[in-house]
Image 1 (spheres, rainbow, N blue to C red):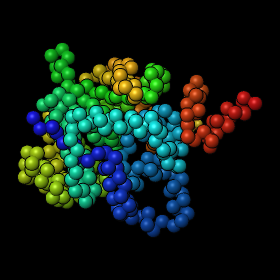
Image 2 (cartoon, rainbow, N blue to C red; image 1 turned 180 degrees about the horizontal axis):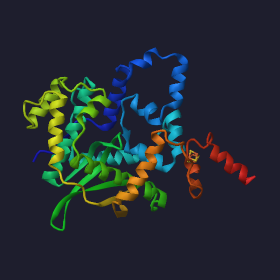
Image 3 (cartoon, rainbow, N blue to C red; image 1 turned 90 degrees about the horizontal axis):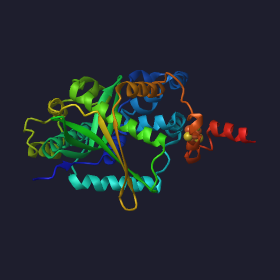
Length: 343
Ligand code: SF4
C-alpha cells in the first residue's frame, strides 16, 4: 500500500505565508488615507487579534491559545518582543515529532507560488490525512482549521487514531509530549496539554458537523477562489484521484467540504503521552475526557484577551514559579512586585 504523502511542513508553510503577506495589499483602503493621529488612535483601540493576526491575514493558532492559558502577560510580551528562541529541549521535541511523522507520511515538495497554492496544500494535507485515517486507522501531523466564536483558529494535530468503542468507530486525538527529565509534568503543564487536545477535538467536531464557511475563509485570508492552482498542485490532485476538474482553490474547497462531511465526530476520550527524550520510553499517559462546558468557558475567557475585551493578566499567585522560567521576567512588573515583597 502507498504511504500517504504530506506535501510541505507547517513550518515551511508559515514561512511561505509570511513572505506572501509582505506582498499583500493592505486590508482596508481607509487605512491608506488615515492621518498619523488616526493611525495612532487605531493602534490603541485595536485588539491583539487585529494587530497581530487579522492584519497579517493569519489565523489564531492553538499554540496561541495554550500560551495565553500559560500566562497572558507572557503571550502579550511575545507579541510585542517576539517569541523567545527555541530551547534545546524544544528542538529535541520538534525532532521527535518529525520522526513520528516520518513513520506514516512521506514529504513531497510541490511548487507554491501564491497564497491560494499555500492554502491548497494545507487542505490537501488534511484530505490525505483524513483518507489515511479512514483506511489505515491512523494519521499524524494533521492540519486543522475552523471558525470558532468568529475567530479563525488553526492547529496541527499530532496524531489521530480511529478506535472502535461500543461498536462505533470514532477518531481519538493523541498528543506526544517529550520530557528532558524522567519526571511527570506539573499540574499546570498537564492542564495546558489538556487544553491543547480539547482545542483539537473542538475544531474537529466543528469542521465535521458545521458547514465550512467558504466566503468568510476566502475573505479573511484574502484569497481569490477562482485562481488556478500551480501546475504541480493540479498534477498532484489529479494523481491522487480527486479528479481533473479540481483546478482552482474553490474547486478544492468543495472537495474538502465533502471530505469533512464524510468524517465522524471525535470521541470525547483524549490522550497525552509523555515520553522521555533520552530513550523515548513512555513516562506516563494522561487519558481524560473532553468537558464541553469548562472548555468553552476557558476558550471564551482566552478569546476575551485576544479580542481586546480585557487586559492581559499575570500568572496566578500560586503559579509564580513559572516566572523563573520566563524570558520576559526582566521586564515584567509582576517580578518586580515579587522582589519588592521579598525585601
Ligand atoms: S514573569 Fe511571570 S507573570 Fe510575567 S510574563 Fe513571565 S510568567 Fe508571566
